[in-house]
Image (tube, rainbow, N blue to C red):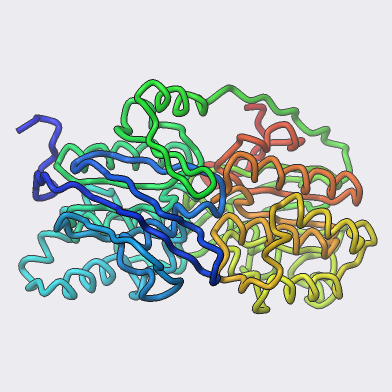
Length: 468
């Protein structure tokens, strides 16, 4: 047995090939998303699926997981043979798949559903906790965790279940760079233990030398790339140093923080003095769970704080909500939390009615829908859109509203390279035209670095402007 195999998980080596034969699937009648698709996945391999937003990557994983067509869409022909492998899936939005309050309860619940006795699942719980390093999170409420922490917990659940095939849909969309490297290494360990791993991603950092098979979706076809082509694609996302300017202390401020203490179950922020600058775009970064989204919640009256946070010279906590939210708005990390209507057309109608600026005319909105590849989805139910399509629609809706301040949480998660260009251009043009104050939380710098004026890092309970 190779020395790299850790003792945390039972090791199984299987020879069953995963076969997909002549598969056709559609959400809308006569509009196939996957058409006569045939491909195979090697057992015990680490496979990566890439391709544009909405091309069918997530759909294919859900078909393999047995979720479709049982819970959506129509399989018009073909079959999937997993070769007898047991399987489980991790969603892009990990929060959607949890049913219990804490990671401990979630893992035990999953193992009880497999018919395990207490002495068995206690051992599995310990091993999965050590493997995913979620010990400090084990009894924390999942609803209070960051997106990245939830994704780590979701991986622990799959590890505890000890399935043969792991289907992972954008598993690192919300994790910080350090956590991403950690999780990719953990997947490599699982592969070395004989697990078969198939995942989708739009960011290729950390995969070079680790992924065995790379499949590219284009149109309604899927192509397996050669080893040379694979390595060329995976080398595209090498991290490059970034440089940001430092703000001038006397520049006008939108927000001023003084003696701020921000707490949830523990202290997140202890800030003596800080300005968030008016009419500028500030990138806010920090490790998963340090309190970035909690800061946004404090700025939008959703989380109490001590000390002073002033917007335009007035204390945020004392502002009448109805008046304050005409000026300040948050774009949530989870796009579906922003939707209140059924179809794309209905959502657009609400935003048009609420818009406060004439920049987004009906004609400009029409052009934006075309630029974002959403024009053909106006009658589609918003919840049936792909993750990337939901994100693009969410950002467009919030920009249409014309708020003076936008707090944008992870705007690039789930987006392919072309979609990132589309979304960043839309935000950039909007901010330039309306002079908005924008603060962006993102673990993905690609596409944002040339737009953001400043870089604000949250580390060890303190916010500080940095140049890198």
